[in-house]
Image 1 (cartoon, rainbow, N blue to C red):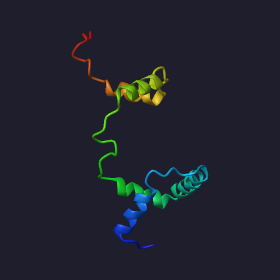
Image 2: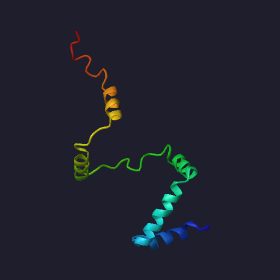
Image 3: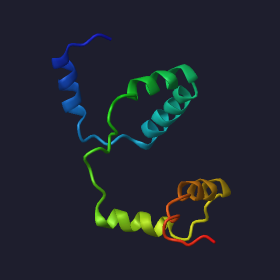
Image 4: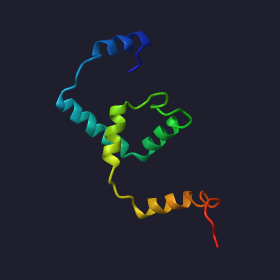
Length: 101
């Protein structure tokens, strides 16, 4: 359906603040999952996002959110692959501080 910008804005303003029903949320969820299963669509969306800054750019986590993230990650076990990557990244960092004989 082709609509002019004025008409789109009017519809958007009318829907602003409206909370969708559980059934509507379910329908949206099913439709989104179905669409995301299509590799062509996913590729198209990927191309559209490239070259644009992250949606979180310029924003900051609150101290409360940082604390929640910290608590969630604490005590989590790293995979062997992750540990290997970390150790690769640290090669040579301390080479000038230790005496190798």
